[in-house]
Length: 65
Image (cartoon, rainbow, N blue to C red; front, top):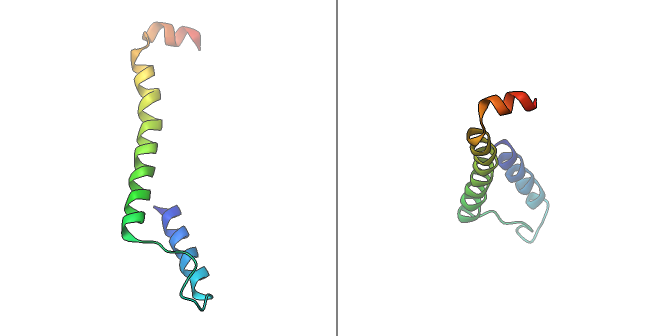
C-alpha cells in the first residue's frame, strides 16, 4: 500500500507539470487490478514455501540444518 501510494503521488506530481492534461493515467479499475495482483503474488510467495515446509518430516528438517 505504501508503494502504491508513492506511485500515485508521483503520478500526480508528474501530471501536474503537463499542460495537455497528463501523461499517466490511474483509473480505479487499474488500481484495484494492481492491488489484487500484488496481494495474490505475495500470498503465493508465502504459501508455497509454507506448504513445502509443512510436508517435511520435522526430524529430517532439524537434522539437515
